Length: 381
Image (cartoon, rainbow, N blue to C red; front, side):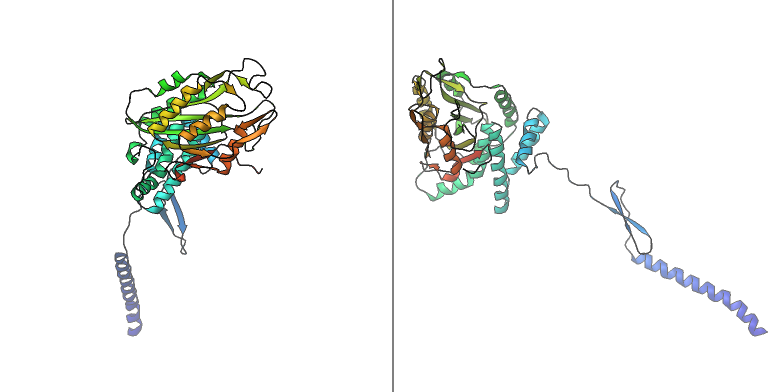
C-alpha cells in the first residue's frame, strides 16, 4: 500500500523534470542558431520544407535592360531612328556609347571595339556619317598608335589623338540637327561655292574624313543598268572641330537632264551640276580619315568638276568619286564595264568591288583603317 502511494507521487515529479529538461535543450539549440530578420520585399519566393514549414527567400530585382542592347541590327536601327527625336533617349544613347570607350583588359577592349564598329555601321545606315566615323575611330586608335610607334614613316594623315574625337554631350544636339536635315534632304542642286562654304566655319580642325558611297542599279549585283537606271556614286566629306562640333557635306556629280536623251548611250554628253546627296540611298560605303592636304585637294577637284561637262563614258559620277578617292589614298579596283555604245566606270561594278573587298589604302595607313558598311544583304552572283 505504501509502495503504491509512493508511485502515485513520483510519476508527476518525474514528468515535470522531463518537460523542464526538454525546454532547456530547445532553448540552448535556439541560442546556437544564427538569427536573421527577413527584409520586407515585394519580390519573394516560397520554398517548402520537409516538415511542411515555409521560408521566404528574397530575390533581387532583375536589372533593367537598356533599349540599345538589342542584338538584332534591324530592330536596333529602328529603335535608334525612333528615339533620335527624343532628348532623354539621345542622352541615354550618348552615355551608352561613352561607356563603350572604356576598357581595362584586352578582352574588354575587343568586346567594346566590336560594339562600336556595329554602331558605326548602324549610324552610317541612318546617314549620321560624322557619328558613324567617330565610333569607327574608337576601334582603330590603338592600332594606329602601334603603327606610329613601330614605324619611322608617318602616314599622310594628320595624326589624331584619341581624346580629340570624344563622344560627349555636344553629339546629342548635333545628331538631332543632322537627323532632321537628312530627313528633309532630297538630291537638290548645289554648287562648289555652297560646298566650300559648309566647311568655312573658322574653327580649328582636329580631323577630316571621307566616305565613298555607291547605289547600284540592282542592289548586290554588278549590273550596269536596268532600263534608265544606272545607279549613282557620291562622296561625303566631314570636318571635325577642336570644340567637338563637326560639319559634313554629301554630294555627287550629275548630268543636267534638259533633254530626255541627254547622258544616255545615244547622247552621252550634257552640262553638269552637283547635287546635295545627304539623304541619298546607298548600298555600299567605304570610309577613312584623311589628311588636311587630301581634304583640300578634293575640294580643288570639286571646283574643277564644277565647270566640266558630264559624259556617260568618260566623266560621270563614278569618275568624279574615284578621283576623289585617289586623292584620299583609297584605291578601288574593277570599276569598269561595257554597255550599249559605251564603256567606263559605273556604280554597278564599283559597288560589287566594294562588296568583294577589292580596295586598299595607298598611303601609309593600314587597311584596317578603312571603314566598310553594307546597307544590303550580300547575294550570290
